[in-house]
Image (cartoon, rainbow, N blue to C red; front, side, top):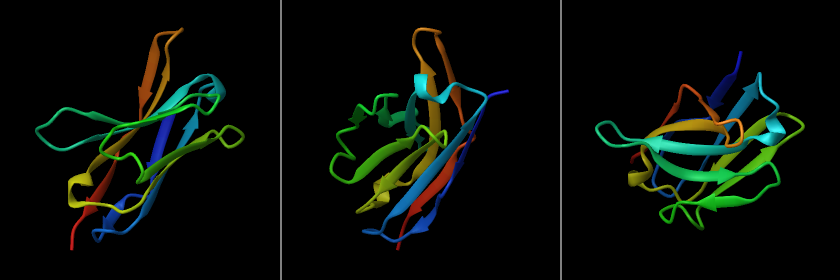
Length: 117
């Protein structure tokens, strides 16, 4: 059974930082591209950042220079370091594991991030 479990969300003031974690189980972690997405109620889920098994990263323009995605293949975990947070970063953040060759992807349950003074 595949599980992706996010943690680390919460309430933070503008300009602050948070670190999200996602622990994966039930998959061969190293062959999956891991990603973070976010969603505001009433809008579509949007890509935040992805990282391949080899460590190649991509970022949404809105978070470049502020967020850093990383992974630990030994711990089957992916992280999102979020710095200089803005109110518009407020959303539910979801962890994703995607394997294009096998045409499968999995989602976590989401963790709420709220940026507010």
